[in-house]
Image (cartoon, rainbow, N blue to C red):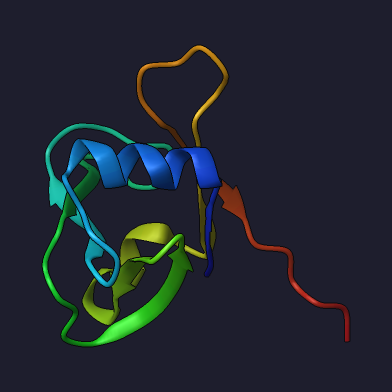
Length: 102
């Protein structure tokens, strides 16, 4: 599992959440809503410090991460976040991880 986030999307989070270098953005499983990977759950975000990191990605001084307890939600998918040109907010997608050949 990886977090793939564009520089534009990272800049959006930095501005929208008033983040400074060294701050964190956590992605987590939230009960309710819908997603492409888990029925009855959706992706939540918060800006709290990590406890048990499963994966992290630093972009422009901000650390985006997922904790171990939320790995199940991604079901072997990478989290892909982009900010399309002209868009007011990031677009979140899930990309199935490829399995290496033996």
